[in-house]
Image (cartoon, rainbow, N blue to C red):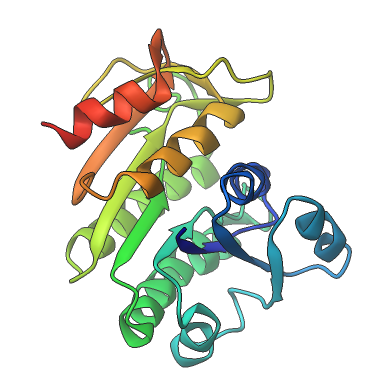
Length: 219
């Protein structure tokens, strides 16, 4: 059994991940911001931890993380609040979480990032361009840290039911992926610590999640 701390626990991937991990008898603690999210996280099997990533400093966040084996960062502004919120959550929030993990002595850190080719070739807003820039710089900050990191870059996220079949690799063609399968992949990475210091691109595919992650672990 591992002890997992999820930042962005009330988000769509965070909730799914809490349910999967708790169903496998892992201990899950999930950071949430809005009071109405507390009961939902409990239903997913997680212990809710109240706190806002935009207000917590590294020391305060480290106190919440203390005793965890793995930190999973799935937080994101989701385009709400414009560039300022993206910068605060996806950018500075990630840096705060890195510092907190180091302070708390939690070495393993999983980050949900963005597929580099997302919407390339299409007309996109300045807000989206800023989002992609911030995501890349967040990846850089984590890679340059002393942590045992894994960066997961899913394609376009979909809400349809997951299939349990994915395509995952260091560099793969761009595509879509159900949020269910992103969460399942994260859960599998948690359970395969040999997957370390690697950036994984992820889309829907035809390989079972466990097998796909195992191939990366054996690379």
